[in-house]
Image (cartoon, rainbow, N blue to C red; front, side, top):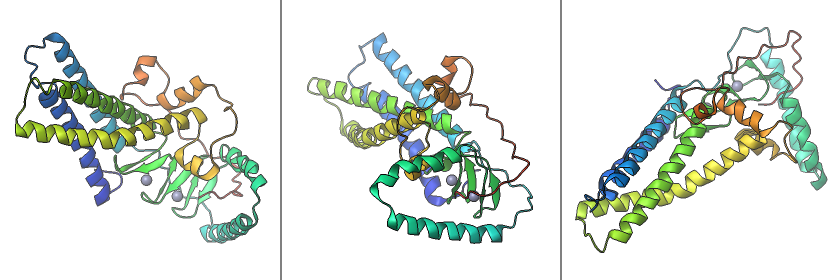
Length: 294
Ligand SMILES: [Zn+2]
Ligand SMILES: [Zn+2]
């Protein structure tokens, strides 16, 4: 069922589903329901909006989990991987030597390899594939993934070119839920003195408070880093390796957002139903395998 079978990943996936359902149920049926029988239409609308965002979170989470992230197709190529492994080992050794000697000023030169990555096809000696620009090897999936961002245990899948939009929306919707649950808790807390509640409700509300407090930091950090990643046109893997780019990216903000959300009407961008249609690139006929980025 999952593309990547790992017990801790499946556990994290189920846990994130549980947290979404718990947040929805307790926020709507305990916190907002608490002593508010006579509140009328306004509270009902808030409850339905909350249900709607929970449903969107569930859809985005499911699609991010079960969409092929962009695994590089393995083809029968006449490539001698033994020879490439030796070359790669030699390059790594040189890289290690370079690092030892590196001076502070050399940081600026790190832009060059990234520029190369945008155009160069490379080979991966770990999964023995010939891969398009910006593909990286995932040690969990043991496959190369196009435009890989990171391997996420919460969705038990890699985040790559084909499911990035679903993952990004999952983070955005989670942010809405975190804020919504937080505001509901504040609202409930202010009413507490007037309307006492029973012990079970108190326990459930306290559980929601703990979850909300923990995920406020986590989801905020994730959302900020993902927005920066989209606007800088650099994935998490690339930022880790090359750092953040210096200066403005060459592409316009709109084209960077379109690359993630896909073409079509803007209202579809914020819904987890369509994805950017990016065809598999065709390898160049003259295979030049000089660069090895694993
Ligand atoms: Zn690989
Ligand atoms: Zn992976």
